[in-house]
Amino acid sequence: MVKPSFSDEIANLLHASHGNPLITCIQCGTCSGTCPAVDYMDHTPRRIIGMIRANLKDEVLNSNTFWYCASCYHCTVRCPAQIDIAETMYALKRYSIWKRVHQEGLVGPTFSETFVKTILRSGRSFEPILATSYLFSAGVRELIQEGVTATKMMLKGRLPMLPPRIKRLDNFKRMVSRVIPLEAE
Ligand code: SF4
Ligand code: SF4
View: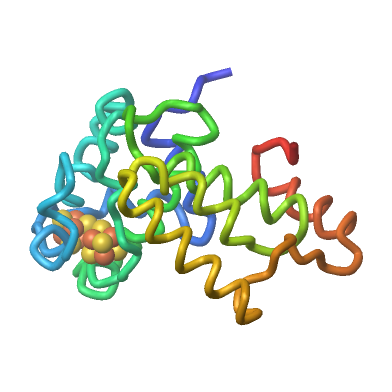
């Protein structure tokens, strides 16, 4: 059996697209020119697509580009080749977590894993747990400020003390665990 290339694996993750949409990229740079987060990225969206096509797996996975994507979809709606670049960024995030390979020191991977695990445990997002994945990287001042704000919101009933749980949680867990390659606990 022939092992799929990195480029093929990413194409397979883009379930909604037919075939491999990235091979139609003409490297025009419209995505990079329109991206509001490009100044913070190691590689522009145009370049990251070129790197996927060149099977530069390690370089792609170790870049911060897809973790800095704000999912604004500007690139997707403007791409002349109709490539869903924002969805490609999501595919790279999923792949990176699945393979447990990412750049050190990024908030995104921990935040994403915490979010999915919280959802799998209760069926709902719970901000106090999510906050622990990024608050400690923001410094003591921000930590205290966030703590004060959270306490005020809890006292006014705007933030629950305990994680809310949905009904029929087991059914939900079974459904989600079929599509997300993460353990629930
Ligand atoms: S806008 Fe589309 S065609 Fe142009 S570089 Fe970006 S992905 Fe490729
Ligand atoms: S969806 Fe992501 S990559 Fe595309 S323009 Fe917005 S921030 Fe940039």
